[in-house]
Length: 94
Image (cartoon, rainbow, N blue to C red; front, side, top):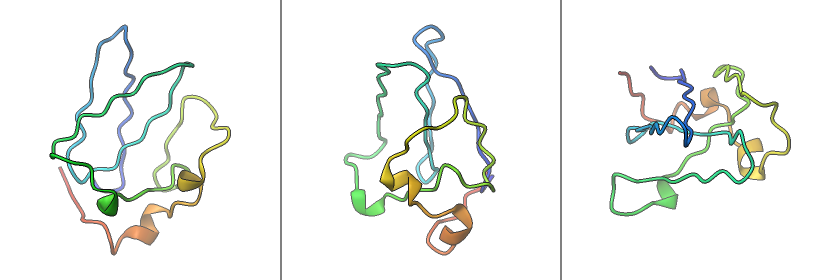
């Protein structure tokens, strides 16, 4: 549902993968050094113009990050909270 999140642990040991439907936000936190993250897109190309960033610290999302977040890149730190993006995002429900 809109504004909710799911947390899944992916590792070489469990071999799990995660499918994120088009239009859904996604983010990750590497729990080990030298982590490799691979994305497979369902469209033929990535479109930077269609990309949006949601603040990972948004209290409304209540994400319990496994490791306390240290330095975060400017893009994430300066991203708007979900409530401030409501006019520019489609509302999906599953």
